[in-house]
Length: 227
Image (cartoon, rainbow, N blue to C red; front, side, top):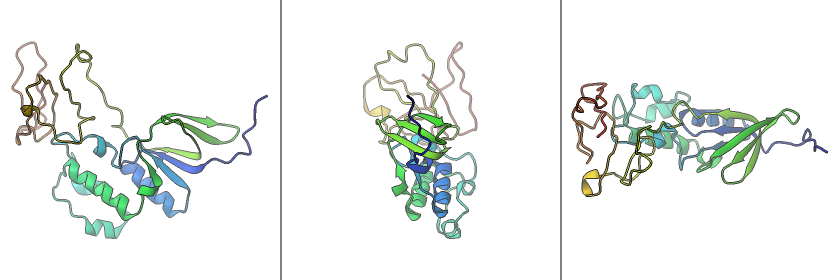
């Protein structure tokens, strides 16, 4: 006989998936209203796309101030962007600053991946299965995963069998990468506005030979290439 769950109460009133720009704002507003809420984030810290994408040259394509939160006059006045188009490190510092300033971190769960979310029509709440084996329930589920949360891996023959070190912009290591420091064979795919300006151990690439994919520059200071 099926067990009725109509009288059960969910563990949380609201669960937010994603601790990026949108997830941070949603959490702030819900806490302001006194609502029981938690954030589930797959990464090791807040920031969303600015946590994951940390390749050299990663930065805004819009003016920095457009990413600043406007819900707090004090926050607006105390943070001065160092560049019109801020780089990833500064953007991540800003988001961490917001999280600390408004004491949001204690409402976030990091390294927490959601495997599935199913809505129960009879009980009127969501059941979430997490990769760590836990089960959470919530009345409302807000997905703040954004448009850049799923990386697109290159479909290049031989990628799976390549034995050298490979780097993808989405999974760029947190520690510095110096491809010139090792004699091991490497075939990094690089992109970013600083590649042709500041040596980072990853060389800019000339136009490929006929029959190879062409380099498509997006600005005079941008190089994207594959060797």
